[in-house]
Length: 385
Image (cartoon, rainbow, N blue to C red):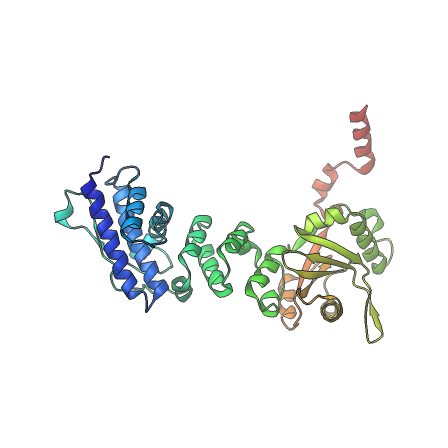
């Protein structure tokens, strides 16, 4: 649809007036006022674009003209104006109380004398809040617009959005870090690994990075299960350890990115007492040593005390001044996650408890469907011939 210069000028004047009004009030409530402004402009733009009052390229033209008439104005590029429209359209259901949430409102009223032009009157009114139980209202109003857009763009579920709003506000995370954690599905993984990271790691972003870094279960399919369960448990743990050492690349790939292997049976000494943690890694993203202790038996509370002792010595004797506190991961054959979560909170060292599986732990039907080693060798040799 073709638009006249008069229509575009009217649109520019309306938005410019709203911006100037908002800037006057912004001294008292910068972020809330900005959200109200963006929501109102988003509503105005949505009305005119979705109803096809504006033709193609009008938003870009409005953006360019605003920059000319308000030198130094930032945040009103074509892309950001479209983001304002997204902000309104994603939260507009709140006006009708259709979801468990809340939003600052900025009213747009249709004026009969503007009907020929096909625009709506934009008014930024007093900030009104609809209070709904369980919605992070304070965090919502405190969160920056770019964080809001990152969440709205990457997350569609309302419960997940509420979680990331709380997280972003509490951790003061940068937008790029927030996007990375959303991509890592922090929401789904935050409760899978029993841990005490949020209690023991002061930096909330660091704590949630650690949570998203580790799984609650690992498949160590490179372990020769025929060597297990034929000796005592200490020998079984050594078998698992040696299998990991000989397949350290596979183990690191199983654990995730940015892990560097430091050593196994790493010698620690304090006050004449010598300790040997099973595996020691360094994670570049966390900037912390990661101590992995292997147990071939189900979880026991005593294992946490042993691991906490290793972490204390690592922090005192091995950790460098620019590194974060060491993190411990207890890798057991089995664990009651609710019980682990309950008892681990009393420890002041950051620790998590994961379990591991081998091919022996697979469902019998699945395991029987897989060829054994000799069959696999025969198949490979046949293929080679």
